Length: 114
Image (cartoon, rainbow, N blue to C red; front, side, top):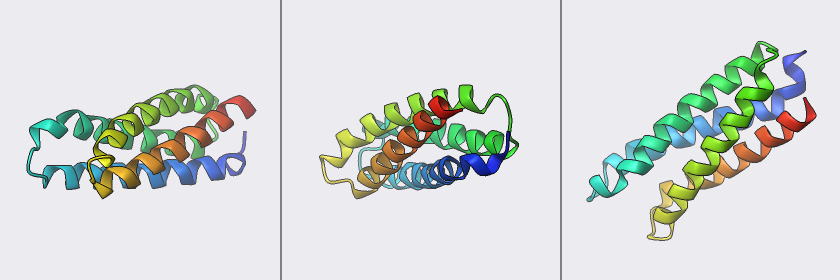
């Protein structure tokens, strides 16, 4: 299976990983870091899963579909958490949530098309 077929999903995963890493760093700069601990944890987990999914897809792995299903789940969980903080005006969480939703959608589409 050629990785070219998954290029859009790979790009969404990379963009999401960057947004999640940025969000985690920005959360650490906020006043009440303890309140953001779940957000930071999910940001870091989501970034790691997204990077892994992009790498596995780039290899044309037969495990791409399974990993992308997990990636979509983690992205949706991260987006949910970030959306809570975005409502309180945290722009980095809004940007992260959008990237997570886009990645989840791309991963779900890839997993069903594979």
